[in-house]
Image: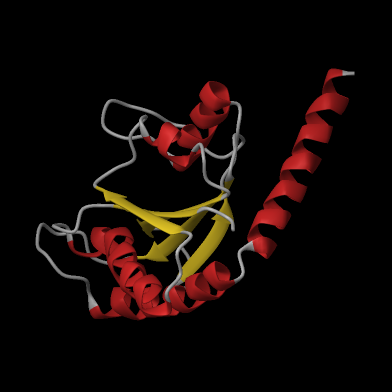
Length: 172
């Protein structure tokens, strides 16, 4: 059975920035009700370098965060070493965590970022109504992918093999 981690991050005290944390709460309840045993959860204000160890033994990792991007409601995108890699003393990107995992543990789980469109970021609790709608839509996709993770894992592995082949060709 494939080991899956859903990792939501953001600040629930800043309105829609708490979307990642809300996904974790709702998915934990759904997984428990469905009796699914191969899914783990983590939630934090931000990603940390220690998360490289956390993801190192997983087959599939889905990071979840609120987004200010120009998207309709949500989007699921692959995360790999070629993704935006950033680190400061206050935050680490999913791409940085995946790269660090590969560098330290010589492994790279199939990794995705679920971006959920948010609208308000004031210092107050609770999601906006539009963000809640986007959350509900994204949960349907996430549940489908958790029920059958093979497609996500195999498509990531295929993309990774293409990227590695291109890197090798560039060295020749």
